[in-house]
Length: 320
Image 1 (cartoon, rainbow, N blue to C red):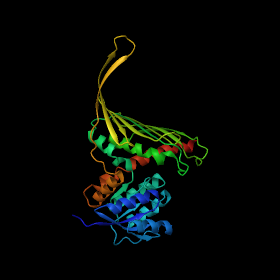
Image 2: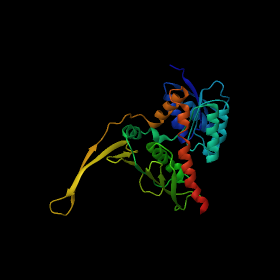
Image 3: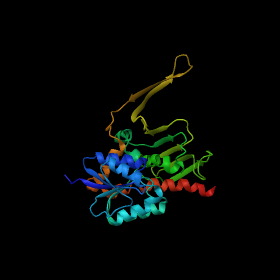
């Protein structure tokens, strides 16, 4: 068994605090350093989880890996510094604040053959993992991710919400899309200029499959649903409740009085393959890439496709 990894975490905000908890609970890693320029906040989280606080990224000579949960605008410089010191990196989405910078980071990791993961957390939702283990030949994906308005989120829904389901659709179909069509809506008076409130996106794939992905922050309830259609099955995934239901149509016919129809459908509710928290599953996979259990090159290759799609979606703003 490999030695415990000494991990640096950058960022003590909401997401960073969750990462700190997960890292500190791991039986394969220790949270060694927590980096945050805000001393009061950084020290508080560091002390809670037995780490040393630092105002900026330290020398990584005696440290094994880095998790970045800082503001997106800081990602590029942090990522390039971590990779320059030849350390594996798990970075929250988006990898950087532009597709060009994202590709630079991916290229640098490729050149140095370093593990690089992006925090596309829904991949590790127990319901998604269960559904993916059951899929055979998906041809149509419909994803809905709607939320009530949150004033604290000033960016648009493309990077905040849409990217998760675009990533899931790409992984479910098994290839990057060959076409992207998107319509954006700008509605809320409190949103930042050109920060989209609704994004409706259709993806086309080389094998003929289609995905329709909807993201909105003008909803009145939180919806996180995914429907995957095969020729003879429908797999419904509720990402909030973390459950999976499979429907297989058997027959239908008119009822005797001619005023309706009768449908027979077989319904299956499979047992989840895991109940583990997605952030814990993600961190475990990151450690597996660090230890060489998971192929680092294959993992890196899964990052760019969803980022490229979102870049095309938000480019629609330039024509407004």
